[in-house]
Structure formats: C-alpha cells, structure tokens
Length: 475
Ligand SMILES: Cc1cc2nc3c(=O)[nH]c(=O)nc-3n(C[C@H](O)[C@H](O)[C@H](O)COP(=O)(O)O)c2cc1C
Ligand code: SF4
Image 1 (cartoon, protein in one colour):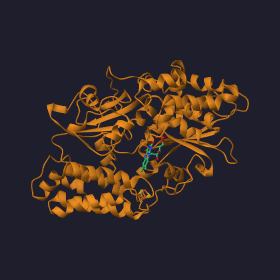
Image 2 (spheres, protein in one colour):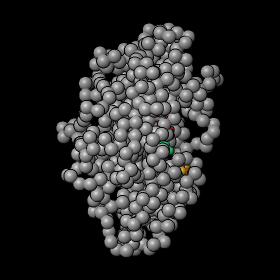
Image 3 (tube, helix red, strand yellow):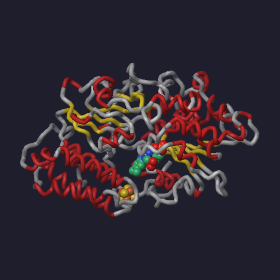
Image 4 (cartoon, helix red, strand yellow):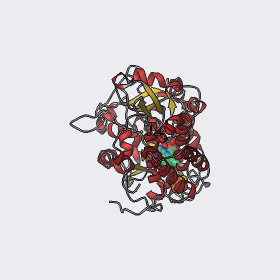
C-alpha cells in the first residue's frame, strides 16, 4: 500500500512510458520479461547465475550462494576490516551513476554509533534507458540479499532495506519470497548461520513511481514515510542517514557484486576491468540495435564494439546517428565519438558519463529535437519542485523546445535553451537539475543545425511517436 501525495511541483500526471520507450529490450512472449541475451565477449561474474533458476534458494546455494557471507563471518574480529579491504582492492565503483569507490564508502561509516546503522539497497532504477537492476532482482535476488548482509557486517549494521522502484512492484513478490526463504533457512533474523549474537534483518519496500526517490537522501525520506525530496548535505548518509543513523546506501548491482568479490578476491576482480575501474558491469543496450539486451562486459570495453559486435550493430542496416552512453542524464555522443572505453574515467574524458550503464543507440532516422524534448519532458515532470533553477529551468526548456518542435520557434530559442540549461548547472539542491541540464547542453551544442532546421521549417529525422503523444495535453 502507498498513499499518493501531490508533489511540490504540482507534477500530478505521469508520462511514465517516456522512460520505458527508451528502454526497449527483447521480451519473452509468455512471461513478458526481458529475454536473456549473451555474447562471447561477456565476462560473466554478476550474471553467471542468470537463467539457472537461482531465484530458488536451493539453486542459489548449489551455485555457491551464501558462501561469501559465511566466509566473512569466519574472519572473527577482523571481519569488518577484511570485507572493507577486499572491497577496496576490488576497485568496485558504485553502479548507481556517480561511480564512487564502494570500499571507501563503507569505510566512512563510524565504527561506533549511539544510533542503529543501516544498509540501504537502491533498486529504484528510474533513469530512462536503464534496465539492469531489474534483471538481477529477477534472476538472482539472493545475490542482493547476500550482498546486503555483507555490507551490514562490514559497517556493523543489523538491518538492511531493499527499496524497489514503484513500477517494479511485480518483482516484489520474487524478492519477498527470496527474503522469506533466507529467514526460513536461518540465514536472516537472530543468530544468523547459527552464530550467537549475530543478527541481521531485511525489509523490502517499493517506491510510488517518482524518479527523484532514487536520489539517496530522497530515498531515505521516502522510506521514513515522508515526501520523497532530498536532504541538504552534509551531513552525508554514512554519518547521519536513515532515521538519523549511519547508513550505507548502494545501488542494487553494486551490492550484488559484493559476494562475488569476496569469493574471487579483490585483486582478481579488479584485474577484470580497467585502470581505477575494477571488474565488470551490466550494460543495458537498447534502442536501434539488432540484439538489445543486458550484457555483462569488463569495465573499459569499447563502446564501438558494444554497439557493433555485442549488440549486433544498427538495426535494419541503417547508420548510427548518436548514442546516450549511460542513461538519459549523460551527454550524447555522436557517431564519430564512440571509440571510447566504457569506464567512468574514459567517459569523463570524452565529455560524458558512464552513469547507470544504460546505452541508448539512435539510428539516422531519429530526430534529435524530438529526443531532446522527450528527455526534458521527463526531467520537468520528475522535478520535485523544491529549487527554482530546476523547477523553472526544466519547465522553460520544455516550453521552448515544444515551440521549436511544433514549428513556431525562432533562432533565439536555441540560444535560450542553452542559456537556461547552463544556468541550472551546479545551482540546485540535488543533481537532478544537472541531470536535466547536461544532456540538453550537449543536444544543442552537437546538433544545433537540426534545431535551426526545425525553426526554418525543415524537420530532420522521423518522429518516434506521434506529435500529440509527445507534446501531450497540458505539458
Ligand atoms: C535524481 C537522481 C536519481 C537517482 N536514481 C538512482 C537510482 O534509481 N538507482 C541508484 O542506484 N542510484 C540512483 N541515484 C544515485 C544515488 O543518489 C546514489 O548515488 C547511489 O544509490 C549510490 O550507490 P552506488 O555508490 O552503489 O552507486 C540517483 C541520483 C539522483 C540525483
Ligand atoms: S534539483 Fe531541486 S527541484 Fe530538482 S529534483 Fe532536486 S531538489 Fe527537487
């Protein structure tokens, strides 16, 4: 149950499927779930149990499940240091978007605290183009549970929360069953694995469909039963988090990687990836490719190869126009800019971000004006309305781009869009403002002529959906 509350910005209607339309993966007709894909270049660490029925606890155990957490428990008084040092050695960086080193994040939590400590798993996964946590919850939910326990043991927490995106409510059954099965085996609850005095509980919770609650402090507000708007930082969650207690919050994929890392060793995991970017990552490749899907590739893998080899190239023999490399907030790359490695540092050098691993491929038929309008419509709708640059900036950009798209714009509109976006950057309470501004600036800078052509009455690219659907009533 959840109670719908009107958001501060009065964004009461949801163009929800704006996000889903970006993320079109092949679906199994019977189950309506994404079909599993594979490619020889994949390095299967996180995905090694996918498709093997590991949502069943017995299967998970058969496939080395719950071994890592027991290995951690065997370290005795050195357990916390051992886990944190292994995570640091792994070079794992948060898979939620910002790429913060996970071991370091866990080490920031004070050893002692008057208040209970918590682990929070961020399964909100609402960034358009992103669809990889979904696959983990579906195929390997116990990896998330075991990872939560490991994070808890590392920081001295006795409770963890798994927070699922509101629209993923159908996955809740799978996750809840996995949690119940872990309790039934004595892996969760009091005296876990028969160890006196070692307790750990997990509670599952779903959101109510707001992108903003994926932001860590807004997620905590939401979990505490309040409106999902962010908190001012500092203090940071590691010190003052959920219910005021020290809290580690990680993306579901980050957490699910922890058991694998403990089992294989930090150094071995690090070696799979590139410099300062340890391991592998799940990439959701969607849009105009022959074989869309979620693939596990080593960090640093070539974006070009990911598109042309792994995902089978551009659909129907068309030409590549552009790529959004890591979810809709990441600045777009043109077809000439794809010779870059898929890790946080190489993407930053290329002027974009690895983000949440959602690669959206656009072919030559796509209208960038339309794409830009769809992106800003999403952020305008999802702005919580708390700070003016985000609330007003997204709205003005949307209005201006709508005018350009509908054919009533003038040359000054293109400058205005860029000016508005540049003035949002760094001036908002949370990064949603930047997430809206960054792609907008890149669209205008890299495809300015296309916007001007629209203004001059020459529409480039074929619309993806009807104008009425895109512009919508009242948005
Ligand atoms: C508007 C907004 C939405 C976000 N949505 C998500 C999300 O859906 N899932 C996620 O893991 N992180 C999301 N983040 C990032 C989180 O705030 C946080 O950095 C992340 O959960 C930390 O986990 P990591 O260190 O494992 O990446 C979002 C951030 C912002 C600003
Ligand atoms: S940037 Fe400001 S208005 Fe926008 S979502 Fe964050 S807190 Fe809300």
